Image (cartoon, rainbow, N blue to C red; front, side, top):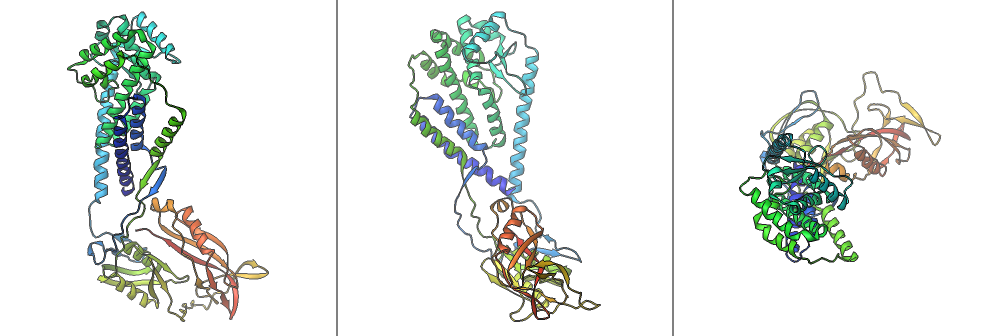
Length: 528
């Protein structure tokens, strides 16, 4: 939930910055096509994933020392360790996302209800006259359309519009408005709607619906939608003026008559031609229509530069990736109830609770039985490891669990004596044995190791867990082969392999002589 919330808010913030820039640019230019492109980028920015992210630094908050509310409760009885949060209830991010999704569903349901209502209106429609059908075909051809849309005349007072919801595009015309217009005015009305079709503006309706559904709460989404529609109307006005230059006066009269026809009519939310009935714009649109001024196209270098800037604005997203530390400092209490719990599971639990990566030397194992209530977690860890004859220390952002210096834990002997060595193959002419706890082979001991790098994709997707690997350590302590036995993800396995291949060991020995062995190592990947 946190990832979705962060992505949504990042897109909203980036779109707000682009919207302010688009509004500023629109004040200094009179090119509707440029306005349309700028505001369309704002809508796309709301929906586009971060294709190219720029990391922004986040101030470190430091460690959360002594906060008892972050303590974990662990309860184990002869099984794997399970962590339970002592606090109940939803996280704030979950609550916010629940409200967000609920609002989106309500908005989408409202839009679908309106679509159903319009579909019912279409059922009462009738075919237009032959003259209207003929003019639709001619104007469609003049605008470069492959085919003319199906035309329906409806008795209801609805705006003239294109309708393309889950089907072919249809041109909807109100019967009463057609009776108010003469032939020239009807031509300009048809040319205007067909200009929308030639520009593929009906496709943008789906983009607007997606943006308003997902960002129903965001005024930038509503602002951008309104500006896109206004720019579309102005672009179509210009296209009609170019297509029917001798009908400028008739076109202006058509806009006035359409506004009068729709006055007092509450248009459906999301109507494609709401701007056509906007009296606040009517004067400016008529002045532009009546003007015979023609705009020169922008030069190729300017268009390429503008396209590059718009593309960068669309695909580049500033992302807060440097997450602050949320590690539980020593002194914070923890409650444990453990009975015959696997030591490595317990160490994994400490990693999850404290936020520190816990690394144990190879071969460390055992079971833990203890009862601790409200004990500082560092003391609890020390007590558990002391029972195992182990010790721990901090190493940067990691907790290293190791055997005491110079000591080697004697593994318990099996009831029937040491297990015989198992030969798994040969390496450079020498036998390779499998290391078995309690057998006659002394395990290899780490001399130097490299911590694995956390893959970025796994970090973003919060993929965590243990990677179990079998190493082939030769009789000089060099890792000759790494075979992954278990891993939560392929990229974690590759990261573990890259690190383990650089480890160096004091070789395993049998009867005092170095031998090559296959040896199991577990690498933990954990995020806070």
